[in-house]
Image 1 (cartoon, rainbow, N blue to C red):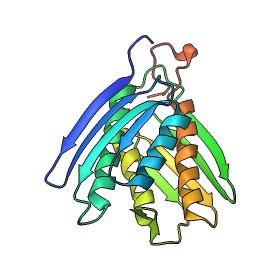
Image 2 (cartoon, one colour):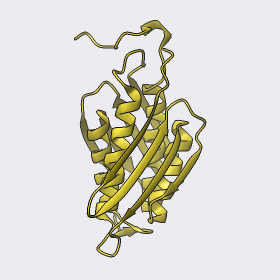
Image 3 (spheres, rainbow, N blue to C red):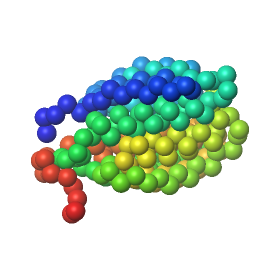
Length: 194
């Protein structure tokens, strides 16, 4: 496969303006500015551990709350990943990872084959993790996987919400890296019996 696996996507609504530039075959470089420092932290971890180059710029109605910004970043990032994967030919397709972070541990299994479904089980306890409502962590992951065309199964345990959320993004990243990796045995075929 010699195609450049990258994407540039933008979404502008009355509530947000989000721009994403993504390169799958990168080095983990990230420039992220969403107005939500904890979301920026999670996205930088995703880029580093997936070894994708990522540029995310977002502005939104944070005076209302973080929901629209978090959701729209997930939408655009998922669309960018789907576009970068193209017809998904030549990729390994499946990935899994277990990532510990102190007392927290998250397990991820995923399929990059284009079937969107998410099961996210993260027992987050607090109302907020830094600048982000805890409920939006799972919402981000579910929205991202739907737009990216991923089947995502994620389960975690831990006492510290920050550790649990960060381990979730790192485990997602490491599983993604396996799933979107080029499999020379597949050449330009899609790993599917359909």
